[in-house]
Image (cartoon, rainbow, N blue to C red; front, side, top):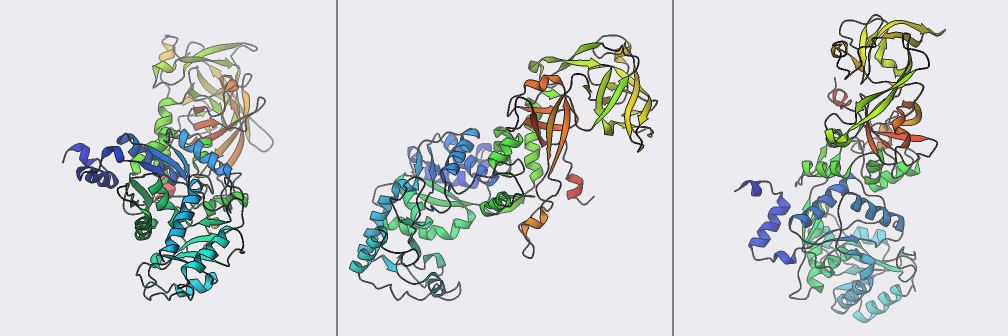
Amino acid sequence: MNNAEKSLNFIEHIIEDDLKSGFSRSDLRFRFPPEPNGYLHIGHASSICLNFGLGLRYDSPVNLRFDDTNPIKEEQEYVDAIKKDVEWLGYQWDNECYASDYFQQLYDWAVQLIKEGKAYVDSQASDEMAKQKGSPTEPGVNSPFRERSIEENLTLFKGMKNGEFEEGVHVLRAKIDMSSPNMLMRDPIMYRVLHKDHHRTKDEWCIYPLYDWTHGESDYIESISHSLCTLEFAPHRELYDWFLDQVREAPKLRPKQREFARRNLSHTVVSKRKLLQLVEKGVVSSWDDPRMPTISGLRRRGYTPESIRKFADTIGIAKRENVVDVSLLEFTVREHLNKIAPRVMAVLDPLKVVITNYPEGEEEWLTTENNPGDEAAGTRQIPFSRELWVERADFREEANRKYFRLKLGGEVRLKSGYIIKAESCTKNADGEVIEVQCTYDPKSKSGSGTEESMRKVKGTLHWVSAQHAINAEIRLYDRLFTDATPDAHKDRDFMEFINPESLEIRTGYLEPSLETAKIGLRYQFQRLGYFCVDPDSTENKLVFNRTVTLRDTWAKLDSGQ
């Protein structure tokens, strides 16, 4: 086995084995089939990367198909958001398809099954049908309507289609085997009556097909070669194949369903139902709230498509479900932003520094690098003046020898600027330090080439000229849940684990180069973390979201230290 073969995941091994067995490479076709009943989340990103990644690997088409068979929950808003997310991740689909495109064909096939004695209209209440299903250890019981005549079934099914019955009065069921060990094979429901307008077909239909009937037939219509689903659909494969057997005509390609495991992310939930609860109960502001695990939320927070694709590639495809630590996702975005994000200076908890021996009313512009790791990023000018802002945490009146930031009698270097020494400080009536008086060494300017400029001091601080600073709203986002698996506790509601400190809003003081920062642009605020410009920004007010801190601040907490 060569290195290329070793790197294949088990899905790719299946495809390679099919190709070796004579399957034509030109017949490979994949699909990503979301239901438009919510926004896509990080779990969907793995499926997107898998299907579209296979398309790229094998130079094969990939369809984007919306499984839009439930008008109660589905909306055009979700369709548009899904398309935007897939494109943002860097993928382009071959055909844009909808299960609703196939409603007539699915109906015609259902009529054919009725004529062949393989489907019937059941008029029982749902709870009665559920009781008759049996259990995993006991066979089911046939419906009293199972042996209705073909003529009666056709008449009733047509009446269902024409809107002659109320919801819940009749359903269409496949006639398979009520004693099957696979309970999904015990006469599954194919159609139900729903008097709801559909976001595409409007009021054209008042019966809608269920997932199991729709999915495999849609794959068949589109000539999908490999239908890849998450592991919970493994028991559905037998039914998937049974339905295909009823409609497939040789020699048309037969789709193959195969399953892979979900990758759950720690400190979050990915159930659309639970995500919707977070929105409806006001825990978050919207589906694209930067604390949400949705792709739109991650995008708004400042994540890059490259980092999400890297995350999906790193966790890979497996046969067993597990929980992936969110710190891995944070690592991938740190790694990418470290390469591409311009460095800027911002102060989020300001303390004023006055350089007493710097001439009043004067200013100068210092040259600094945009990204020390990328020469092509160039340089910019930042203003320096007598009064500066520094972080409050960067000053102590007294500190031991291991404290390398500003302290009385101690020296630090200001990033790209001068060496300063703290001489005294002023306090308010509560004893809080509100100003630090410093002196500077005018010959110590970084890059000036003087002997003093090369003098070493152990601490370097970021800063902003108070005179030139621009104000911005800074949103410090953190993990939405304090527990690694908030929805895994049978005796507690996942809402109990909401992190009350998942959002902190501050006023920040930023260097003036950021005044023209555009929505979506990403920066490293030096020594603070990575931030991006939020869409809430206006001409008069910038809003920045913290994407991620410079280091994993949760590592010690998660390890119990």
